[in-house]
Every structure is written in C-alpha cells, then in structure tokens.
Length: 96
Image (cartoon, rainbow, N blue to C red; front, side, top):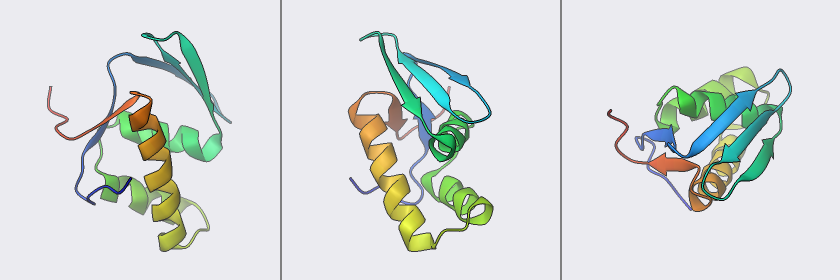
C-alpha cells in the first residue's frame, strides 16, 4: 500500500497502547488481539499518536535512524499498510 506524503495518520479509536523503552503493545479493543511493535515500530506508533503526516513521520525516522530515505519509506509504507489493514491506523482526516 502506498500513501501520499501528505496523508495524515492517526491511531484508531479502538486501539489502546502501552509504550515502553523498547517496544509498544497495541490492543485492538474490537478483536481483543495484542500486537507487539519493535523499537522502531514503537517510535512510529508514537509519532502516529501525534497525528503527523506520512511525510513528517518519514522525516523523523530518517533523521533518527541510520537508514536510507528510500528504505525508510518502503518500511514505513509497509508498516502503516499493515496497521491500517488491521484497523489500528486510520489514514486521512485527523481532525477531532
């Protein structure tokens, strides 16, 4: 799945999470399934919680980690796509 760089992202209202230093645990209240995110995934989850755009999150990841922009974009695209398919992330309007 590919997102526009200006696509705003937000955590779904049915997702509850606990961020730790090395990971994030995300509970989908609808299915009662728990998802574990590694440290980079946890950082991305936290940035999504700040209601940032795809472009903003990508810029932070490239700046904070030693990763090529193309690789970071592909990895971010894949993770956001997976989280969106699970109903944990919404892509689009973040008002409210």
